[in-house]
Image (cartoon, rainbow, N blue to C red; front, side):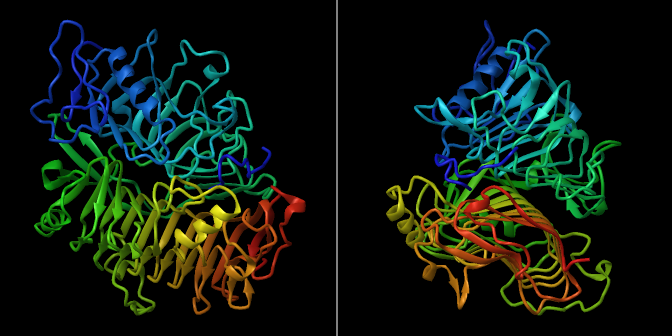
Length: 639
């Protein structure tokens, strides 16, 4: 995303106990605090042995105690963009906060806040759960934006908004001012508006996109969010589009009839969906993971008329890993039939974690992060159906890896199934699924890989990913042109995602800053619902940014041999801050064939460089004479 200090983007715009899973240390998480006159709380008999970075709250705990624990973590994480600390705060079923003393939560980097109910209505927060702008200039008093508010998760609970004690502006909404790698899932929000921008902090108040799924929401103030995907939800209303607001299977979604003014893209139903697995506590206090079933042509929330369809796996069937657990032990446990729970923290992976069994679940808590060491591919999934990987971040390491995650074998015979109906294919009704899986090349340290995510299997679903070659970080590069050139030569990755499999679907596809095509799609019958890209900021010269004789590499490339492909709502943005004279020929490149369709695609200039066309030579150039003004192609080929 944009180097957030530059302002490059412009647009219009309770009394007893808390259950602590492990003894908490000052560095790993907030300390357990007993109520006055009580002993320090201990884990209950059914609580699993999880590490200090996971905290489980009980509704009988005093509100002040819960508030103090959450405030401590928020203070640590509010500016900890490139840090290694990770947190998960989990709420057992019940009500938290009162009308007089609401629970008002701030969520910082690498923090997950989630309910442990079987339904979102089982955990009720009387208060607010919020993210505000970060102020990056003048010692934290100016340049207040949400463009850097990455890596946080909110899910599986109800919020009855209570702003008691807040000033008039803050009391006007629940604020969730975020950008990439931030998901809201399985929420039930009532009592006030939900605002996706922080209009109470001094401007410019820019925000840069996010993701909501399986949620019931009040009026949503989109405000300055330049792009957003809302999937399979219910909304009371929506206020603004900026460049690319997308709705798929959403009850109450606005019409797209006026596109591009406003710039809404609305699909009545989601072609392929599967909700993210979630940890919960049953009526007997036993922990389990609910794994939702895949759906086709779905609409609305999954939990409105009963439990989310799917299967339940007891937590005893999971191997619980911590940072430092060897890959040999993880692979041994997976081979024995265990699923994998990755607890919060950073894992150095120098031997590939291999998922070989169908229907295996790999669930990360608190943004568990796998970092490639010695050139290893951190995760490989064999050609088996129904594997689910969720809540995991994968980082490149100093030694170049071939990939950061590989789904299926490299060999792929396109057309294996010919014209057989989807119901006749092994994985069609049970796709391997990635939910909230993020990838990073650079940022907290130097990173090198050839490709971040390689998909070779058929029938794969990617439901919300951010694949990011870092445009800023703490690697030690100097600022300015020389530093950007160093980044180009050092943090290397050709492609963000390469899709070789057939019948692959992506919903919420964020891929940015890679050094060749950001996405290469070789498989047949692919579908993307919402795509967002920024081209790399840091090519030193035009010669460094050439695809043969073609100036630059497109953001989204569908291979020339592909016969069928669909893309709904795609944006490609240019900001060549290292060399503003650089040109890129096309934002999108696809075969000119009747089976390939693009609906609502756009390009935008963010202040430097030129993107000459939207798709295949169609669409006017976006250059510095029209910064922040999109060039749209409603349909390609034109209808």
